Length: 221
Length: 207
Image (cartoon, rainbow over all chains, first blue to last red; front, side):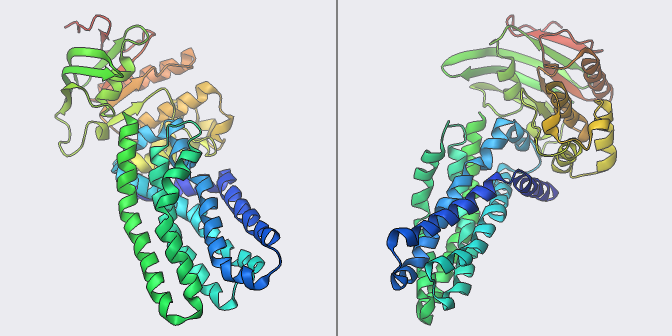
């Protein structure tokens, strides 16, 4: 277990020191969301009706930007070979690295989402729900993304391929994330959507590392 | 303890790189792999480490821990150094200690490893500012931060100066003297105490 924390700690330290991935993701999130009112015009009712959808889609795209580095950097400098000889099974290596991605990308994006909600005239009552759904939904983004990152690790300029693999997998998260926020006005739909969103995240936390580790085993050959 | 390869046949792409190779490396012994570029030194080392599944034959460690794979009892140093540029020298070594060895006597081991490879004065330095040879030494320091009986080294002297090569030879000699074993792919002759040479072009082990 100590190896798991050592790896998690190292990945978080690296992400903070190198800074690029977090900064790019947050900057991209900000730019995409702030372009929306400019494109759609100053119709506040329209904006507040589609705010949840815009925030979630922009969040997914922003998270995509940093996914490809999850394994690529470790593969390039040979770290992955050594990690594979460690006491941790490869499944836990991928889990630690996905978790680190969530801590360094998912959480900052989830915290930034309500700030950007102001730009879209998001309903005040929806703010706490937005934070809760983004926090609960983003683990699925990181753990599913790790599968795509592991599959495209060795492909040059694999970023677009990664998006093609991963974005369809994000559909359930997107649907239930948006419906939880939109249902926030009425009490009935909220609990159901929110619980399904949490279930999706829990399932991906279990299955994502298994699939990513299987992909890495093929690459290590 | 001995590392045994039985009747190995290894394919890379569509090419049979190694065919019908058998050898055993006993504890306290080092095996030097030689051969021209493309003779299959790296392939063989990666097979011993378990990254590549051989087409035929198998690799086992007799007298090791049966619960663990060969890879989990081996240090593998390949062409790359597994050094993170934005961590300091000491942080790199401490991470590998915590990851590979669960951090027992962490400071002592990390200190000894860095001292052996002459990196103690650079320990607070970010690895990004190291020269190629210094990065190589930091990569090799991993051998000493965690204790493992099998060392699989691929061209370990690449970009090392003479003094550093001697430090590496001393580390390997210490390792074999204390009951470890090593398989080293190299083009340069290394002044090892108890070493046999396996020329992959000829694929014969002198007794």
